[in-house]
Length: 345
Image (cartoon, rainbow, N blue to C red; front, side, top):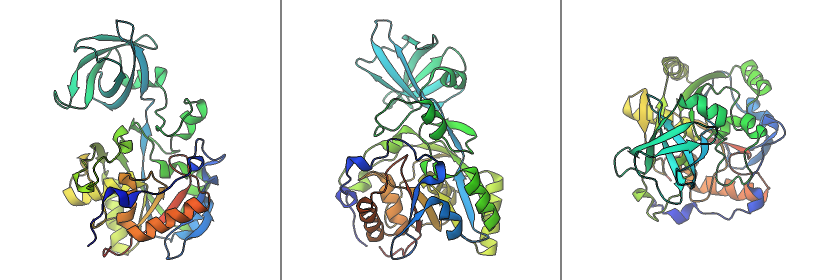
């Protein structure tokens, strides 16, 4: 089997193809059909026609928090927190952007008037994140005073449009700091068309962390260590997957976070917990048959995942086609549909 390095997943992307705003309508995006040997340009609204009665669409129903918070140190210096995880007792785990880290015990004054006391690093004293105690319920404070945590490649400040569109129509479990972007294309009309087609639906939860944007810094991709994210596969979805296998239908994962959730569950046997699964070419998929996904960053772990599923050469050919065809890339961009390819990559 071929040995892949980081450079294998690089490609030239004109900056103007990075979508800064969503399409006028959720289902108004384009869809690159990559399920066959030849790419086919379609509209996202055609997705129901590409699926079959009895197929099972699995979504990630996580809800994006307004997790970006601004404030200041007692000395007057400004800082920014990006809440990664909510713990018990009004405690949170967050990234901290500040010129000089304040000492443990410092009481920060956050915009909106609430307090955040620095308790230490997380998950241990050498950890990359920080643990804070908020002065009130973190979910309430983020909703009232927080900002939408737009990805680093979206250059404008968050707006009311982002609060609405950087969230799926079925989001219900708060905890993510990045949207499961492949699901942003679905609106009520598309869901109704899928129902009419006889396509079934189920959901999992994976709270997407900021680590999803973490670059791979080692040329040997096997040396990269993935961030950890919390997931859950509820009993109803476990049963839906079992019923699907019994009737011989296809499991269609909506987004890479759904793939990581289902394959983590398949391997560990654990229906909930933390996963740092890293899917690269050569990975043996157990659950996912088709994948609906957006277009990902060069050299990203997400591009490695889709290459593992559909085949490296095929995926890179599709990406060249997308660039030449002017498809819109990343979170607010267009979508592609892929089928699981040969394991012999």
